[in-house]
Image (cartoon, rainbow, N blue to C red; front, side, top):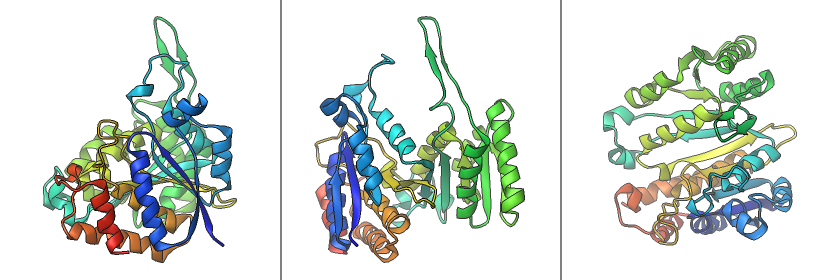
Length: 344
């Protein structure tokens, strides 16, 4: 049966890197693509960042690929104005996706592109697992002329299920990140994660780390980490920090996953944003999108061989010296795509 992929190009450089990724996918298999709008593009066309039709199409798909959402065109301080990022949050919620998984493995070809010394990033292989449905992003919000509030809220169930995702992915250790010395939600987080480990994963080491220390250790000693588990906002920040270990945020893929039974279609996207400053110039790095597609092939479509082919082609293109501007080179999006396609 031909696998169905919902493609959401989105905004900024999203359509450019999605078109390149479609070429790569066509080189390794036969798929049915369903292209839909999200984010600012959807606001322009329909007045909302995610339509019911787009959500339904994603639910029908075996997996969802997303380019990027957002841009200054849709920025507003008006709390009633539709925001592109809301479409992504609603999509994750509508698909039942609660765990964002971001592998961070600096490639040897790009060691010298990292702002950190080579000896600090060699052999780094960590995974950031970020909770997606709770926390301050989804809490009740208020706004008056004099003040504003954002409620940070978590349930035991929300913490338990993302903790299981982290423990299942761990080779040896889970580092759970919180701010338990200040926040009540973090104290609940720490208690529940400890209970899940004690009850279900006693063979996996668990350590707790305050978020400010975790931010420092990611730079000072990134090899310390195996799986880094954290709540929504902390994970949003720390995963972007971790991306710079690879030399460019343009190299980091991600997956948003839900329950295996019934299986939710995973959502796969590069960590970088819509980069409106370079949109339309043809210089965006498509490799994080390619690597996100490889995660999709592996995790949602059960096509491990094809996933390895894509990952190998990216590394061989880098071996050949292909570097887009974010990596210090002059290769265009088309150049990088051709270099990867050459090895598929």
